[in-house]
Image (cartoon, rainbow, N blue to C red; front, side):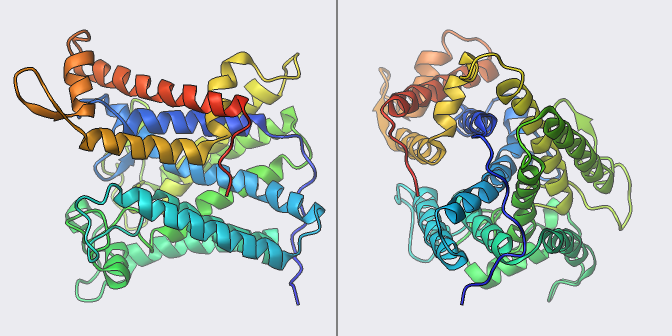
Length: 407
């Protein structure tokens, strides 16, 4: 017997081209920050070492948010085609397993230093697969009210665990970088995955198992955004998104102890010392990080909705959106192919005129970009921008031929 969802479907809504654009912008941003020409890039294009979040740290939670936005519409579409809850769930399991396998492949490629006892299990696509599966199950088998309760329990429970519950053999561990390998998240990683991790000499992982629980709420925030748009793509809907974004962002910053705002990011220790403070921290994927980045995602979606889907005269989206639409409609391909190609360019060795050997990626930075651009951060940015434009061109070719990688 197939369980019937207690939550109603979202209404049939025109395609959210603003979502394609935001997804494409996020993919482009990922290429700019992950494919920099050197280690001297601008601060906004670097991950924070521990507490805080720069625009670079927004990218991953934005992906989860956008999966959540699309999920209710996808489920509603499959139901209109006659799919049962069981069929939808089986499809979700299959898709999640494929995503997970692709993520493990991408994370360990090109396998030159990988051994069976140390290959990395967690990663970006793996966490997306986990959250997608959990989000699908909740949409199929819980009401909206129950989903809100689950989100609250995950956020508050995760804070309570990290802040107040003693770690076996270590006691209550401060949420500082010095104890990154000893907190509850690291303890669960070591217990479940051993050395199949990626940080702290393989003693913890930023995409580990325990910190994946609050990341489910990052996806649920996107589901909430979809519900706000179920009555149609309207100015009122964009306003609801923006107001929700401001409130959620503020809640994360206050609960995070008013961490210093520096440029476009929040960087450093909380300004308020209190046991109730839960610092904004991507490595731990803290509850405040969920609120802060979800608020930003609400605001960005509202902005894209205003610019792309509302108040435009032509039926087609504005021309400036085309590079982002081609990336956004082939996001999995763009993410995987650009990442794998970049890894190959870092492995492929090139001999310079003076006999030194550099990777093809470093050779381009040293001999193409650095000589003509005196600023090291700008040279790095131009390098990564050229790489991103290459993948825009490839995805544009695929878009015009209706070639899309679908799972």
